[in-house]
Length: 196
Image 1 (spheres, rainbow, N blue to C red):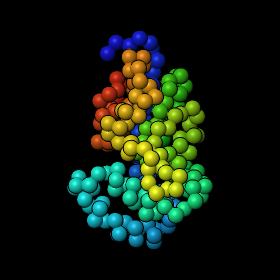
Image 2: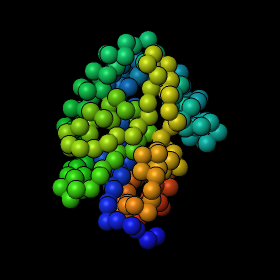
Image 3: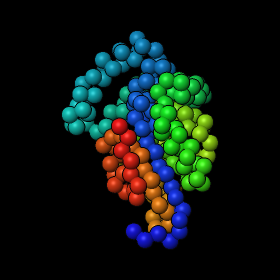
């Protein structure tokens, strides 16, 4: 594709790319404790099994589990837990080589986005330490009873990028991802990197 400028954008997945693990279940356990976490996982195990067999949508399963754990929590408390969890992520499951790559893109004057199916209230605090990064992640309802955005997975990642950067001829695109949820974004990029 012919470009009209030399503007460059870098897009990073969060779970498994910037971090070494998926953060949804880690956050639930961090916020609710091991006993309640295990009870909830047992309760939702049939739904999780259906999701793994692709008989139930990934996003709907995640939303139901999220609502079970957080529906009755005040939003301010939830937001603070996200801020606290960011310290755990940085100290325990951050990929140092990807952190360096983010810093390099910023140093080159590239626009950096983190596009994630995880929830904005913990993804954004985790990314704040890097500096000027825009986070496009799953948005929650104010009462924490579910999500107000589509599950940011697969083609939805490309859609979310195009909402804010619609003129594809106006930039070169680097993309970093680790899973099948990142395939469409990697295919969309000029310079894709599959993180192992």
